[in-house]
Image (cartoon, rainbow over all chains, first blue to last red; front, side, top):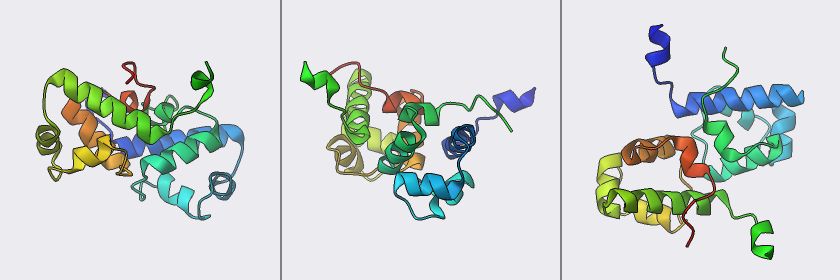
Length: 80
Length: 80
């Protein structure tokens, strides 16, 4: 109930979306990092909300995940 | 014609959206920076595509502009 009124941070939405779309593709964090041209630990940092990802890296991740960048900022459809 | 096949960078879309929504609000770059809690020159850097804005700052700008963060990554409706 009150949960729906809590505004999750954008970083958290982004992290969940990256994990959800990556899981849908059936690839590991390391493989996604490789596809997007990042260090192998970077996707893990993104999915743990540790990284304050830049817009250039949002674009690279979206391209690697084959989704629109804006989609990664939306409220995740699949919730924990 | 061929223009529609050119993929503008996400940074450029974001810059145009920030400028368009800021203009709709009738506020200066300096005022938007103040509202979002940035240095007064930061919005100018964003709108000139100089800044590689972070997701935390995308959230702050969206909040100050009263739009959804994802909206700022969409293809701008108002083109140059």
